[in-house]
Amino acid sequence: MSIDINGISSPKVHAPTDDSKLKQSVEQQQPVKSESSQSSAADTVSLSDNAVQLGKVDNVAIAAPVVDAKRVEAMKDAISSGSYEIDTEKVANKLMQFESILTSEK
Image 1 (tube, helix red, strand yellow):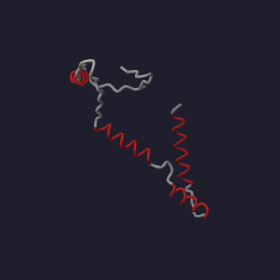
Image 2: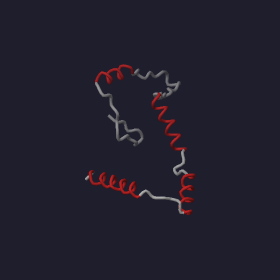
Image 3: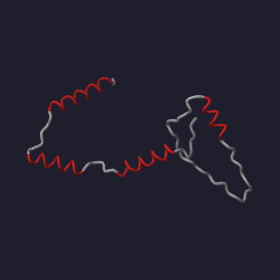
Image 4: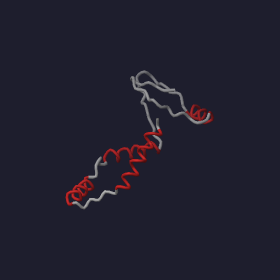
């Protein structure tokens, strides 16, 4: 079951793997109680420890630079000075691995 909130829907829904977990999660949910029309109900959200940790990892990944500038500069210097050596056997092996991945997906 997916929920469409303001036209946004998630393509994947993670359901419990067995019925006992589903029953437990349904039993633990409390019905929403509304008080008088004068007081407003506040919505609350609680995140699991895994979700909080995933959020922190995501923030670190976003803050990390896309390119390692020091490594790029070292490569430029090595190429300019002529000291950069290419391991042709390693390059050939990686190309063959890549080719086998492309042909196996057909």
